[in-house]
Each structure stands twice: as structure tokens, then as C-alpha cells.
Image (cartoon, helix red, strand yellow):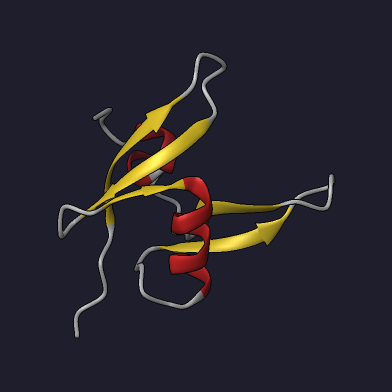
Length: 75
């Protein structure tokens, strides 16, 4: 099975990522997206632990700022 990717994102009023739309059309809230990334079913992203101890999703470091999660179109 081909891995999905994130194609769009929704942010809250503070600009924090709240949910994602995948290449197959699924809409995942942040917790669902985090689980999907951790299970390896989403390509191009990874999970890291922030200084606050929480887990966060970020794009794989490839030197291309255009595929940063903050650059995804809104949905």
C-alpha cells in the first residue's frame, strides 16, 4: 500500500496546526495525524518531542522550505 501524504492543513487562530487532509482525502485531527505519522503510514513527515515534552509533527528536513507543513494550503 502506498503511503499517504499531507496535502492541506487547518490552523487555529494562533496559527497552530490543528488538522490535516491526506492525499487520499481523509481528514485527521492532530492526534489522529500524530498516530498515523508514528505508525509510518504518512510519507514526508516525522514526529519529534518538543522542549515541553509533547510530541509534534514536522516535515522531513530536506532543505526545501516550500514543503514545510506551514506552507500547506488551508482546507
